Length: 227
Image (cartoon, rainbow, N blue to C red; front, side):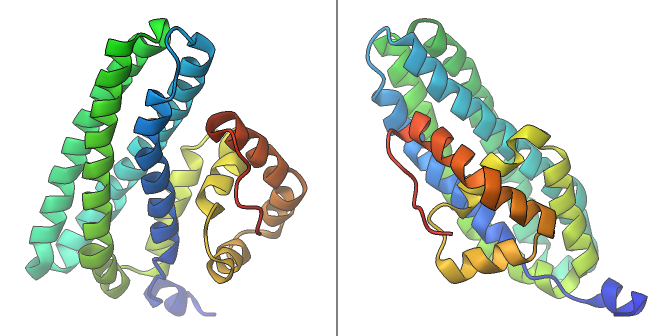
């Protein structure tokens, strides 16, 4: 492949859709997880809050990467399609506000696991999940096709690298499990095939078992075992 080919080849945005599915699945589940914590069960409350904190941190890095590396390129190269991008930015701001509120309420919930704090947090998480579902669905239908038309594969890869660099190294295999969980076999194989061999090997030897244990600690059941 020549340098010219690498800089003009268009991206496949399927990986973004899989990441979105993971965020949406687990944010959708969080209100029920919070409401399932018994009064004064601080151990369980803190486990769920730790999960929430990791999700909101990952979501922040995901959106920051888009704000800095994706939206400016799309606005520059597809000026007639600027309205959807501006809407994405507005939705990011709303989601950030809800995430910050959830983090504040989660700290109170983790400290006492009392009914009032539990319900306030669950209500905020429901609003956050709804905002996230609306945002990501719109991004997938209105913005990702535009990215495939005007971004290069190299630029798209830089966005993915930005996300991986923001993730603690000792959590990358766990996050991979959350992304792959519930994904159809063909899509899962394609996602893994695009990863370096060392990463695929680490997932098979270490990641699947570590992810399964993590998933059980949150959901109390085994994840989908395919993959």
